[in-house]
Length: 248
Image (cartoon, rainbow, N blue to C red; front, side, top):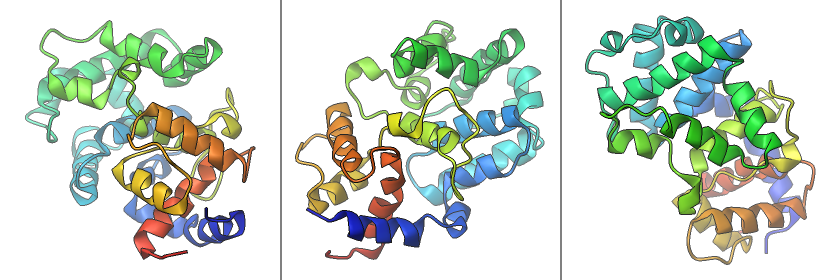
């Protein structure tokens, strides 16, 4: 198994401001208002799959051309017509419209995403609570794209993008903005996808074969042995290992 010293060196190398420019976390750094940040982060996490170059291009189109660089105003006054033919892979205009209308209700009737996630955290069912909110309000026209962007945690999947979103909003570092205080960094889970799973097995940090939520728990618990107060910081180390393709 890789040592803590080796992992910490990779964190030091890769958790730098230079990481931001090529990662979807860049969109939470574009705004100053707390609600703008959390909305931009949530939307960015929904599209963060497939080609990084392509989804970042799509997010730039959405935030700049459609939302006019005002995420909160865009959501509070959202009307489906403004989207035009905006789409990304599985996500069709009706899928995005359904998500944005749900967000509109959330921000016009409550404290928004922070209140929703905090309520789920209090119930110790953070992913289920968030998903249930959106599923209970889904349009009849919501298709595969809607359910791909907001997956059901009860299916046992890794919930990678939601774990990533929480990392952005809960951790405070030169990369993560740490504007939410209802949970501690020690409670975060590692965002797990095919690449992180493969690299974690090479490092000896993961034995489970499937990239599911049980694997997320195993990997996170192993990383807590190195840093119990902030296991998610090793997301950067695993990323760096993959980029460098090193044999440690």
